Image 1 (cartoon, rainbow, N blue to C red):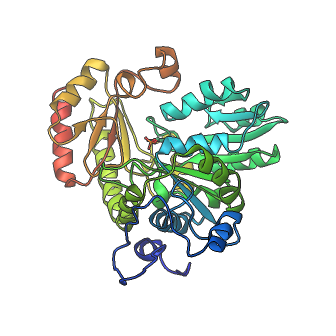
Image 2 (image 1 turned 30 degrees about the vertical axis):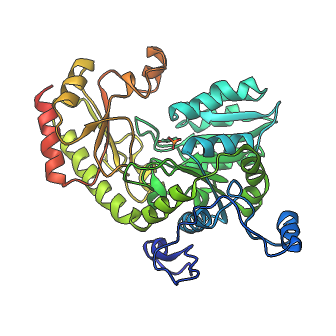
Length: 391
Ligand SMILES: *Cc1c(COP(=O)(O)O)cnc(C)c1O
């Protein structure tokens, strides 16, 4: 559809490929393979002169509908959907890098992204440098000849630090490197890194795009040259394609993405304000709160603060007391679900790090991450008040 339409409209219709029955809802093509009308057609599919489908590891009609709809939202030329967010991150790295290359990344990353950068890439001869992502001078000092990729996540997990995407993109480009952004926390509704100069965006569609805690999925978005070139080649031969069923769930998720994120972000902001006004809370972290350390940068590159709030209580005992008193919010480690989720990062998602590393990332024993869901705002605030009363 035309770019003049609001993304909320495009998310209902873009990518739809109506076939035999004029079906209203997108068809689920649960098929691995495709039959060719003739030997000549098979030959043409394989030499690329006929762009039709060949095998579900390379592409599938339902997956293609999802890819087109997400590319439309992101303003990207092309998209490749993957089996999980980590499959997308893995492909972003391994489709671009070879031994001897150098990568610079922000230190505050989703745990498994940190593992790929800090442990896996060096095993294959790729040198990596981790920096404080919020400090542009550290990026400037870290890039050098041979830097091929820069990687960051903003807002970061779980302390919601904001990194200047345009600033890092410029530094990366000056060094001849590409910038990859993990845009999961911001969602494609509220932050479009490609418009800010990033070269590639990755999602865990497991989060807000599914939005109801059902399927794993991921996506990489970039120029057609990158996606149809190195990314397609890597994915084709290594196999972490998105299943057609999951793509169908994600397509339907995109139809309600704005509605859900807007409702969740509205509640998240109300919860953040409530927390900020409570004496038992040492810090309430939310990018749209004026006292967030990078509030103005956040509001310059994001349309809203997102759906995640972090709060800091006195210590682990207070954090556990809070969590165990919650009745609506569930203790879990996912995010972007319709159900509100409360996480204690130091003992779960970030347990693997040393206490020293955790503290350097601002992950104290009193820290709690709240992924705000779709429940009524007043019920969530009452639940949080119940948690605070138990501190
Ligand atoms: C969940 C998540 C991932 C990994 O996605 P999976 O779908 O779980 O593989 C990567 N980055 C961020 C920021 C995430 O929240």
